[in-house]
Every structure is written in structure tokens, then in C-alpha cells.
Image 1 (cartoon, one colour):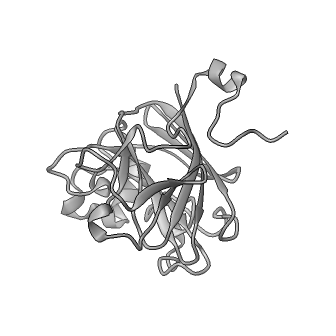
Image 2 (image 1 turned 135 degrees about the horizontal axis):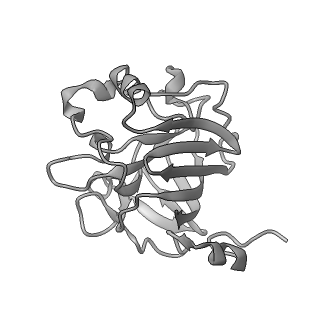
Image 3 (image 1 turned 180 degrees about the horizontal axis):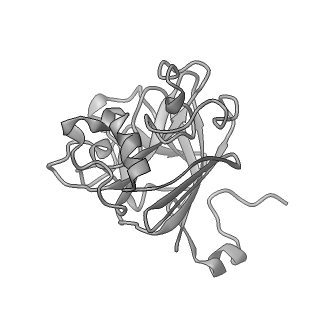
Length: 221
């Protein structure tokens, strides 16, 4: 018998898992640098849905109210045809940073087939955006199907999985990590505080196309 979406089993509860989405409301989230969740983000049929057709002032990335450091994040996403989004983490929410991506790295969410941003291999679904990954490890489900994410951060060590395939493994702040940054757009001075702290808020990104999110849960390590 399949588990009901947006619920935890007794076994998960015992292991310390907590839901970041109750399946009915956006409680626990807010639009970056605002107090509430913008109108482009709604809950429909047990999923958080980003609707790009709604008024522009209702947009912006949504972030967790809480800060997380050492954790495993699990969630499911699906994207519209040509859609693009992302999971951004280690966000330092402060008015001096106008956007989540100025401080937080991103696990890419993408329609690899039809999205405009599919030209660079490290921009494909599941990759550490603009830093690491390629088509050999980016294996999203077809548009309209749910993809499963595991994102683990423990003492700055990052491990990504998309649909059970490891898409990144590395340590923030090492020489290898710094080379990845240096070879990415994050080397620009606008990103001077990018990924400097392995702790912060977690965001679902506003981007072209509609995205849906469910079974968002976290376990502190």
C-alpha cells in the first residue's frame, strides 16, 4: 500500500523526520525578504504549486522560516514543459542580499528536453547549478511525472541524489569546491558571499514555467 503524500510513517517519525509542507497550507514558508507567501504560490491537490501566470508582485522564491545546518532533505518535484526551477539552500536572508542565489547554492530543477536553460550540462536537472554535473548523471522523469530528491548536508559535505542517482558529492570550502566556484558565474563580485556558510534557509525557486512540490521533509543530523 502506497504511503499517503505529505505524511510521515511511524518509522520516519522515530528517525526524526519532520514535514516542511503539511499538504494543505504554506505554513512554515514565506517569500524571501517578506513576511508572507506571494500569490503565485498556492496549494493544490496536495502540492505547493508555482503559477507564473499570476500577477508579478505575487512572485519571488519562497524560503523556510527556519534555518538548517546538518540535515537530509527529501522532496518530490515535477515541472511543466520547458519549465525551470531549483532548490536553493544555505541562504542568508538579509536585505543586503536581494536574492536567494547570492548566498545559496542550488540543486537544479529543469525540463532537460525543452527548457531554454538546457545548453550547459551543469545546468541540467539534479546538478549543482553552474558548478558540477552533466548528462550522464542527470536523469529526470518525463515532464508531468514526480522526481525524487535527496539533498544531504553534514558539516559542509554535500551529497545530491535525483531519482536514486548520485549527482554531486563534495565539501564546501575545499580547494576543489573553490575551483568549481572560480569556473562558474559565482566568481563574480556580486556573489562575494556565495556559499560562505554551510547553514541557512532552504528555498523553492521562482522561475519560468510551473513547478509543483510535495513530500517535503527534513531530518536533522
